[in-house]
Image (cartoon, rainbow, N blue to C red):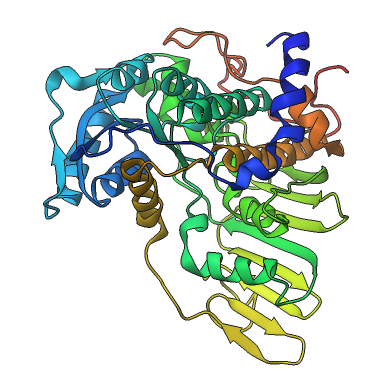
Length: 455
């Protein structure tokens, strides 16, 4: 985007325009009502793509998988085998992926989208998400895309613009922020919004864990730097966004959801933070940090304290907590080492009483697909792209602060955040984060690393 077009776009499609639209589904139907079978395609055949496709096939009504795409054939073959096993007992799930509908390469997503699907599942590493969403919307195809939906500010702007066009076309877009489809979250956040627990004073959100898989391939097992990074994608910022984006987005998204007011999405107006590499220092861990701590501030002055960490054998927690004038609302039933009193979702009042949620416990990963496919079949309004984009941008803002060591406003981050995607996507592409002769990557240095374009 040129500076001029970027400014014009931001006037209508970014901070000023997200607002109420982000919490309401505004699109009409884009699926032929009365058809018996919804045809789907999968782009990105890793573990999450395999899971999302299996859940889509199990959603209400007949669903047929007709096409798959990835850059690696071994990934696709393993995924298809696992999907077949997952839905073997489901009479409404159909898999008819012919050999000619298995697409390999950087343009595989186009071929899947062009193969006659009603819905495409986008589950590649998130750096590719914006261009794939744009193409799906251009071709009039409904989308389920995993989170985060981008890895840099230019990508978020592209997603917001694609979301606007999708609504004009009546397309449905689901985003893999499944807590929005989890009954305990819906119940407790709804009660916060109703004022039952008083006014919100502060939030604490955590994704402190032992981390994810270690790098899967060594350099002598691949043919190029591009293949090496794709095989080990979690450890490269242009592909993953760092773990503050790839995982911690869930908790940050809950904070934004809690702070929404009168149906209008709220997100932080500024942030500051710190982070680094304390444990994962070996060159095989690429360039991402292993810990981030960020203080976010909303427009009304409310603070959200955020931590995410990938370090083993230490205190960990994956939780969200809302401090109110009547007590502390504990969201998420995943915690360890006594971060909260009581078990499960609930509020601990200052008078010592507790109110613990004991209702619907359905799998939110399945419910999010059930809700999307029901909307597609019934022609109901359905759009999750805007809050998915802005929660992604909240995570990117935090990363920009920890990488640079600077306090940054959301306005500056969204408008001036530097792009980190390669200009070329091919096996021999020159990557902006190429390692030195010893295979060592440049790691961000707070106080030195630049994350904003000049004003």
